[in-house]
Length: 138
Image (cartoon, rainbow, N blue to C red):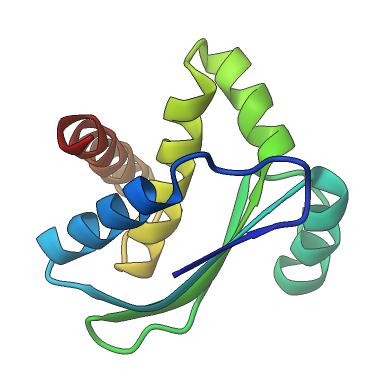
């Protein structure tokens, strides 16, 4: 698992987050083979959103899934700018929001979607479970 930084932001607790992600995936009977997080800003992520998803909008996360079966492999791009703004909009702590977004990406790699209304509800439930797991474990 790799954490890459294309902005001034840096996780202060990489080992704790790495352990949490491994436990979260293992609880769903998935195994992390290769997982890359890229923390960036809007200017970095917007061209990726345009090129690969044909979306001309700002987003907090884009997940590229290379997983096979229960073996997780993927690249997760996170706009720290969007996460900060979302934390303010939702009135939550930035750390909670960054954990939620990282968990969201992991859930996508485990097959959870968020296109349909039912999928969104399940995704939110699973995100909340992962946030609780993070706080219980650490």
